[in-house]
Amino acid sequence: MVNNNNNTTFDWCDYYNLAKELNENEDLTEAKLRVIISKSYYCAFCLSRNFLRDKMNDPDLQDKYGKNRNGKFFNSHKHVGEQFSNDPNNPIWHDIGKSLRTLRTNRNSADYHDEFEGKLEFESEMSLKLSKDIYNYLKQLY
Image (cartoon, rainbow, N blue to C red):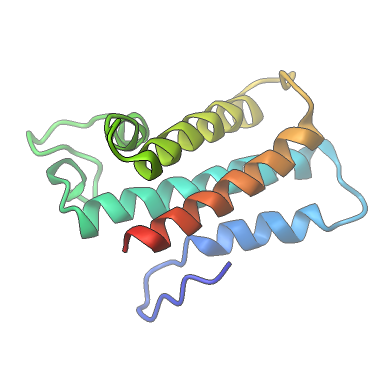
């Protein structure tokens, strides 16, 4: 996946590329599978957040320190997912929101739980797929 980001900001697709590279490794340890899930989520989340911030001019995502339009810290992960999920008339937006919710649930489990609920191999593959799907959906929306 290539973002073709021509400026000096971080290319969030690099997280996906790292996860894909790890997934092609023959020695897939639990730590690597957890990193694949985590980085797949962060690629999709940050691309989605940036779409809402830059293309849709979401007023709650304009502050680089994570404060909303009222100057208060808020849960941007929840906000981004909800912005996409809350448009029932747009199936692409709804699919992005649903995929972000799945990715976030798996990422939280991979990053915070001692025991992963589910099958790590399956969830890492699914995370890569969902992240790429979101990337492709966002390309259509730009």
